[in-house]
Image (cartoon, rainbow, N blue to C red):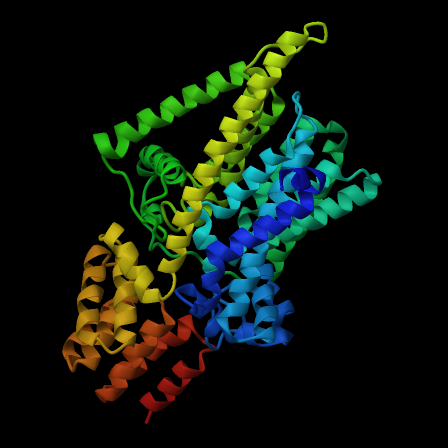
Length: 551
């Protein structure tokens, strides 16, 4: 097997990666739509027609009834185009899961190819097994489960696919200068149009050229300028995006709170990488005091890691380690919440930094294998034999340790994949880890409400409103639960609170429906004129409500 791998490393690597992916994530092909899958796919009429492919470049990602464009604050048109094409093939969730799984396998294979390509620049001889283990680590690490099985996370896998293609292209292509700049620009443009985080690959391809092939640096600059100009013209000139909300604590936190949260954010990802036991959906918290557990302990760990990294750079002068360390720092910096995100930490945000971290570890061990022995000398046969034995022993130990780690990660990923079997199972599992998450409290309530357990759902909705009184979604759901239980006065109060928190099609619709049911046509008319129609002028349901308020 090892002999065949060394003779045909690319074919063998792709075959093994595909088998591992099916073994670990195969069950996800039977899973349905959860969370934002419904608003982005199932209930999103825009993606239900092939005629809307070009319209994907004019809006965001969420369905918006009656509007001319999709609503939202993000610009990810290639993700929407992917949804349109997949929906045209099948309305079942399995086709979306299969597409996402295949892309993840291809991304892992591209990681392998890039390790092989960049290994040519190493001072030491490079064994393709190093790239293979890095690719397997990327494939099976539990932190990537969410990106693989959650359909709404397609953008993370999609922008990485185009970005990794761009990296492999710039590392191996030796064609004409014009074609180099053109093809690289197209791939980087696709990464940007898949997710805003595609900008990370613009930067890391530049780092590669600066470190290893400065002849391509000017071509990279042309490609980036072209891709950036086209992207900004589409985003600013063609797309109509909404302003962001403030449901995330990080979006509402000031700069000081975000700064003192950074050590704990880094500490969270470090612990998750080493010991991925407690995996959950996006976490929403902010460090507001200098406690030992929330600030000083994470800060000490981060400082120790920085000192270890500095020591590593002093001892290991291979530019490849510098490059992958830059990759990791770049990815972590983008997700450190210095620029606030719609959450504090999320598994899917480690998809990019993980490659950099695996690269640092992989090439460090590659050097250890070749340097922890006697220096090789053609005139000293016995010393050469000792050197070869020492190198073989180090390599064998490294392969054994890596295999054990990958096996443990695979088992954890398999278990985490099963958590996504149903939405209710996922939310209840994650809520045990994050009991103060208003988001999860609300989501558990939604699933209970759907299966008819309105009384049980009521408690979760109530708890969600207590944890974050400013979120209109939980107030809307709480009002719906009260209305179904016959608590009309409470339902009206909750819907009114939802309306006061900000525009929401569902919240406005529920409040208007209740006012009509209570025959409060004067209030309904005022509400339509002052709130609903000014915020959603093209919504046909609100126009109908307004017409009924006039009779």
